[in-house]
Length: 447
Ligand code: EPZ
Image 1 (cartoon, rainbow, N blue to C red):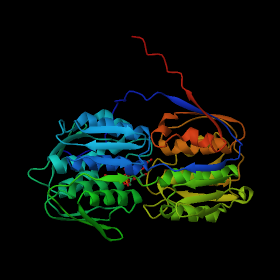
Image 2 (cartoon, protein in one colour):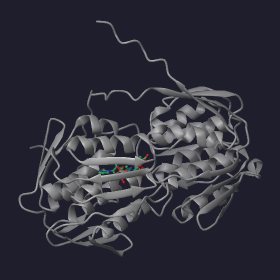
Image 3 (cartoon, rainbow, N blue to C red):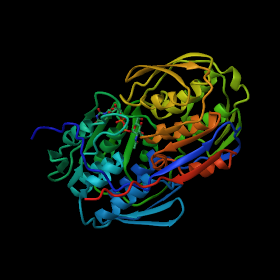
Image 4 (tube, rainbow, N blue to C red):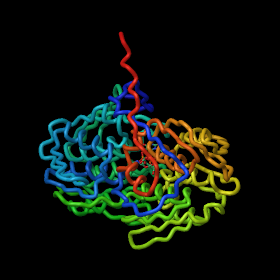
């Protein structure tokens, strides 16, 4: 069967209640904010719990829409998922009833594809929807499929779904990626920990969320370690046990609040902040002239020198490089820096699109191609009505609106709730004027 072309469907999941943010900009942010658990760790940890029939307990899980979608997707499979207290989830996947991950889950959340590896590895078969692309790029999953096939799986692609099976057990092998893929690495890990034999994965992603997944798998009894900066080796086991785990703090949320303090000229302390996971970002802040100091698990930010920020060139890269998820917040800061900043978004092909919305607020931006742009500053931003389409661009629009003089309305705020816990309340507690407002729902089309 011809392999997967990037699959763009017409299907639209039922909409999360459409929402807007109304923000009155120009206020200085001050105070303390608690960093939540990392979305991009929590989603994979919940999926990894399907590798055992024993109960797993996760704490510091962010209360965000994507986690609720993952929990519901697991429940639809027949997995027991309890949510006994805020930020705590318990998973027990004894006898999974269905090995089918529907289009709806994939349409809502690309990360549902992380279920391929564990379900294939533990149960030997799964039908899973192609998650397709989203607003930041095509985002194919060919490398995930190649890795499963290298481990001995048979996978066919039909009508938007991957039909995957592993006759007997998956077999350990060397999985070689053409370039770093975070979830590709994670799917390969989740398949190999129960495979028969030894697996080597390279180049393996080095993101801290991958290390958090490895730490949890070790607690489950998996034999897995990094044997080189971009190499992971695994000795497959026949079965794994339940374990408890606290989700690593969210470095992307932390970076977002660092920029919020910097652009408003404020003074903010981040608590529970993983400074050690933000080296490239903190270095960039230093070059711009933002005062950032790291404690054991705190970050102190001062925007006192806001009028003297310097333009800098930035380039995104796999960890430990500058995170692509922090590119858009950094771009908002660069609109306030003196000079021309060149931006190279090297990971995704559509992740500079949001700069077009920034122009509506007064930013001076030249987009040369899908990977390169130049930001000229400083530009005084003014309030505007803007639309957002993806999670990180949405959070960055909030930062721009906080910087702007006047009032802004940001449509599509529900995208932000996918990945940031209580973001409006956290900003309010720092002194921002931000309100959530239900969007008028368009009347249903009459026949
Ligand atoms: C993860 O996405 C994160 N998502 C992304 O965060 C993050 O931006 C990205 O890693 C890069 O750090 C989750 O962990 C849920 P990739 P992932 O595979 O794994 C191409 C957010 O907002 N590629 O490392 O999907 C791909 O198109 C999200 O939290 C293939 O070509 O990213 C991209 O150009 C956004 N074929 C590059 O590799 C494949 O099979 C790197 O993507 C897989 C990826």
